[in-house]
Amino acid sequence: MYHIAVVDDDAEQCAGLQHRIQDLIEPGMECCISLHSSLAELDEQNVDIVFADICLDGGENAIEEVMQLFSERPEVQVIYVTGHTEYCSAVYETRHIGFLVKPVSTVDLANALRRAFNRLRDLREQPFAVHFGTTSYVVRPEQILYVESKLRVAIFHCANQREIRTYMKLSQVASHLPDHFCRCHSSYIVNFDFVDALTRNNFILTDGTRVPISNRRWAETNDAFWRHAHSTED
Image (tube, rainbow, N blue to C red):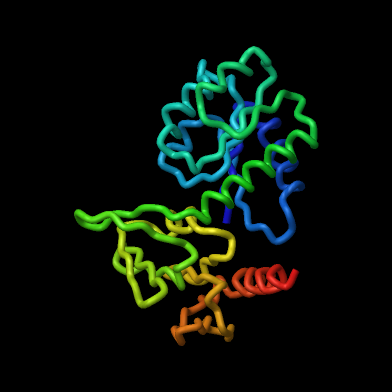
């Protein structure tokens, strides 16, 4: 799942950009697009891609806000949108993946979105660090069989029966993981690469572990599983 935020104080332009982005998303790709009138609304929210209008109501400058909100969150892909070309140099004070000038062409929008998704996929394949107590651990996505949430602790069940624990919500964990991981239950994320079989209620993994599938998530989980299965055949 990718979370995309569109930030513009003009509600009509905000909704218009949302629809155009939705039309460009590949079939089967799980995305949630939210609309905001201010970048401040994204503080401490899980977000992957931000389309930010630079000049907002109340004198808010998106460049300054991006520096404050995302300077320590390199996983957030920022795409600036503006009708003022004089900002084309100032945006380089911040990390961003695109700069779009209104009226935004479909080609430019599609290219910026593609770059953002490619960057996110690259990041999610890379190892990342988590903390538990006084110890830091390196988590390697390719070694994770599944992730379990228990009493506010995320447990990474890895190859060779290794377990890594950290205090994280599963939604936060999911933001670090590649597309072949699926939230199949409120308390579980499964790695399709380690699935041997799918039943109506469980995934059966290569080590024999059964990972439950909730009724609420069955349809989307089943669809995601078969998309992954067909993609590996290509």
